[in-house]
Length: 220
Image (cartoon, rainbow, N blue to C red; front, side, top):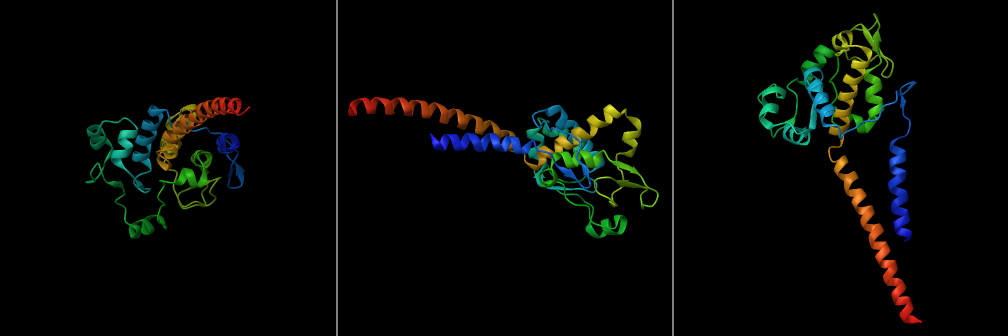
């Protein structure tokens, strides 16, 4: 019984902790709750990422095939629309941009983003994407409130100018959702398994208690 109470406490404490507030540089992170069960959002986020981010930021700990299967995208459609070089569907998601060329063009090697949402939090990613602003003193004419003096251009600037504020918020939310998924693709499976384990322990404990009561009667 003590073990069961401990497991329940650990499980729900973990849920509470994951919903905590995060600091985004010198500002508070914007409120954001990822939903990695929303396949349509993940599909939109994948498409946006591949078109606007993947040229510089690899996802080298993920495989095209795993992403396609998890997001319910037919393999042939994925290959035709979301693989832009000669990579195979079973390959890891490396980019073709060489480090030396990246340094020459951008001044630094863009980081791999497979684990970014786990390292910094989904709130950080969402807030970062939403806080670019004009700054003529910077090489690309923009700066960022979360990552001050970042060397990255505002790659979504054209998209932001075309969309309403609400539409752009959804756009970056989809990208953040996708990065949250890709940083821990087994998270939803673990959550479901955890619920089943807790239910099993509750049922097992109830039966064990009933058996204990019967044995106690025989000892009287």
